[in-house]
Length: 542
Image 1: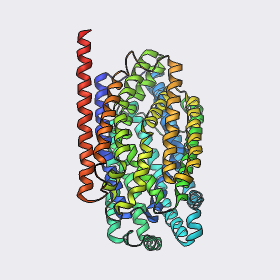
Image 2 (image 1 turned 180 degrees about the vertical axis):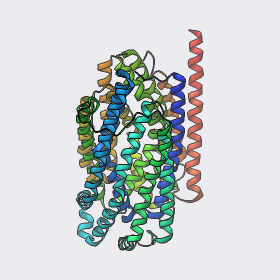
Image 3 (image 1 turned 135 degrees about the vertical axis):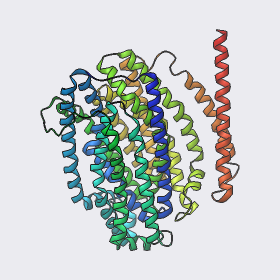
Image 4 (image 1 turned 45 degrees about the horizontal axis):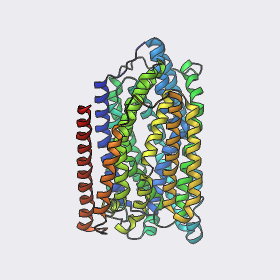
């Protein structure tokens, strides 16, 4: 047997390293979005690029990503815990070999199927089909060409995830969080080069789309350059893998290996909810396309990227460090240790996500105007993106709780329960989106996501409480009361300050956003400090 549980100090260092890497990765990710909006604007060309760049991630999740994330780490840890090192790595090698073969086959299939995939995602776009069929045909051509350049990302992302899982079981968490920085920097460079050789999207979005559509060189620059970023990310992970004691890893094709059978058994339910996720995402993107106007898919994509920032920086770092320990405690049947690790991790996540969600909701429209209203995007064009971000931020807490619960269920190998939670989430998402897209447009699509995750997050906590008896050690969540009070005070201050001006451009907008951030942050820190001193004094009196 050869597995270890992270010590409190090791856990803290792991989370700090991941949080630092993820933070810098997200900063460069935001810079990438800003450059993307600056170069392509919120335009038909941007919609073609964003659609084509989203599909490989969706296909990767269907082919392997969801199953890998849900089952590889628990199964790998179980084999390392329950068997000898030699036998464990024979099983791990069999799993990795099969995964690489599946990824390679899927990459070829989807390269061939690219035109049909794009047609499916734009099937609801009756606005362009009736008013401007030529523009829709050009969008489809550009998206199809870019998708064929982007499809190899499926293979590269798969190798990245396999490498990340291997590092995870060795308790090496930092590298997978740092290497995306290189991907972002490569893509930023590619976009800037593209800006120098392509027509500005703001001059005439239709003309710009037509020009790029008829320019194989420009499409190759965008497509190959974006995929090159993922390849560089993969290559930079190799040094960490080389020092992670993976010497027993071999090419070993064995469909009858116990770990392969275990992953197939556990992964059947996981594959089901991954397919459900992608069906829901397909409906969201297709409905966004149906809204019409200037770049609705890009508006939704940019809003979703921004709302993911606090989750990715805080929650993903904590969950990545907690997941191996939860799997180990479950394997050892140590229920109390499992509950303690689950509860303290959830408390840490919520302490940051609750104030972040409120601040994001209140500052969404002016902040997006400040960040995106440059280059090929005018400030007034950012209103749709800002509204979508505000609606998505309403569900940030629910989304975070839901994802945390799913990680816990995966560590417990309760993939069937996770599947039914995803049925609830995706069913709610699709139903609410269909109801709201008519009266609310893109805002209705975004709001449906928040409603669905909030409902499913509450349901997930109820299920875990029912199964475990409690969600954490005694008084684990008491500090969150202070967080909620301080967040409420912060929210009032931010709402007052941000509405002192209606500016959407220039120095007045900068002052509007920065003033609200500074005032709200000061109010939050002052309140949380005051409440902390009060509780400490009350404890001394007791």
